[in-house]
Length: 565
Figure: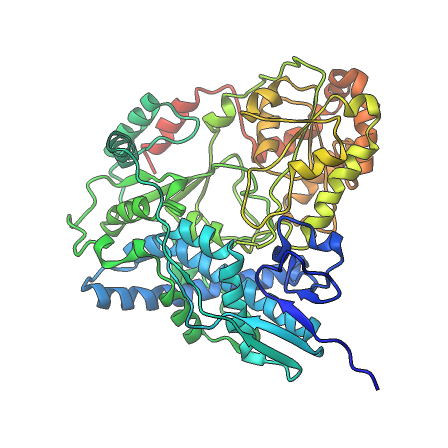
């Protein structure tokens, strides 16, 4: 009788000499940026690849955030000797609680998948002890040094898998590790002062608005005396019907987990003992999206929110309004007094206070496309192997097929067009698949697009996108001829977005395979303006909802609206 060889399960980072014969992996991040899938390593299937399972996980996260917020409010008020109410603590805690809840629930589902895939095998499993210590300076440090850090994930998976340890597994206890907080590099005194002044305005500097416009709109907000407050408290945004957490993880355990990882930015020195004025002197403020990850700025704005000031958030990129699933959008931004959109008034079933307005960021691009070179510009998006949200986007192992589709598109282009192509990779994210170098090794005749993207977009002959995001909205505003492709089996959009995308598919703009998109590029290449003129009208329904521009005086429109909300 022979016994199968003992294999090692890697939860964090695989050794450089690891081979599929001796190691199995908890996930594709274990060999990032190398391609674990290409090397043939055995891994669990992607646990939340199915859109319905992802939405269930998001419901679990939304429920968990709304359960933990009041418990942390009470615990922090007691710890710091404060008496701040939900208005203050909801604003301070929501972005961080969303991140930690999304991550915990994603990793719970992954741990369950690891047990399903490998629980019946004989394995050695190197584990990090629970006594390991990880500290974080702020929310951004938690994202970079925790969520996207294979070592922190190794520690978390070690902790989760101990809950249902299979009989055939042997634990190999590793020494404890320590990760200290890594604060951002300090700003110079003048830069810090300038940033403080600009962010303290009722209407701070927002992309697309000049300083004069910010000052003008700040004055409008200072004159607004309306006392309606449509903010939706976190306690009303839960999902009581969400199923229990995987592996029997409880709310109490989740509270202890979250409390143990509170970043230094939420320490006593950062939280004011008193909110000062009984009532907010300025009734409404626009908040920069930086508040989602800049804890110091968010805590400063929470002072105003705690006094009753109503907060207004503004859409700052694509995906808002049409991705099917999100945790952060309804709990952090949509629930504020107003969320100003790029045209849409509804995001599936997500609750929110939506206000569509033409945005200067898009208005500045209106009709500006002028071909300056016969370039095909191909723009990709991120390929993170350690997911850091529960949002509708490709996850983990799905990134391998997504990247392979890029190569399929380039290979299907005629040689004459491929030599005119430029590839724009996403910016570097830790624990991501290799991007531009991978593409350029396979297609040395294409050029890497570097520098600001906007001039390249405005001067290309044809833009190709393999995702729906901010670049799509910019292309629509600037009237740039474009093609889209993605796999409809992995794409996940709201019901109201699907008919708009069908119009793009019927016009030959949206394709279901990279080869079909490449064939269309070859078909229209010699007369892109003529083709674009024949299909442009199909873009109008999507543009009116997700890239709203018009001939109005945009700053004047904002003045009229902000004085009454």
